[in-house]
Length: 109
Image (cartoon, rainbow, N blue to C red; front, side, top):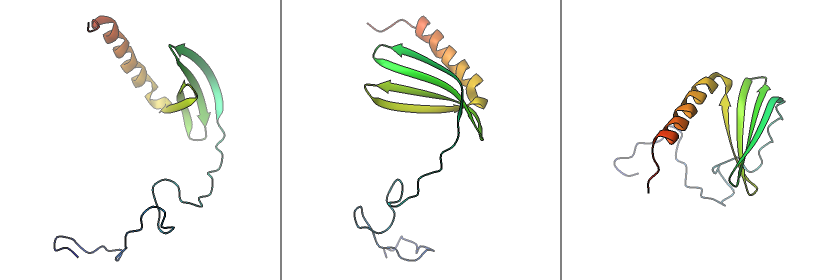
């Protein structure tokens, strides 16, 4: 032990790097059970295409509450963000501010 290290309350654990077959690496464990499917009801859908990006807006509800799922699809690659309904008014306010700024601030030459 190096002089400035403190002993772990969990005992000494040797390094177990990727592929060692022991320990837990980042992400799901090797033999993780799949999560149970959560039932989501779709309340409203909307879709827009901007340049080569396709955006899908889905207002959904599950046992935990309502949320807005925004999915960006670019050439088959998808990225998604989820905004709980409790934050939608704040989200709209910020987007409105960004739209206003984009209209007011002149583009750089």
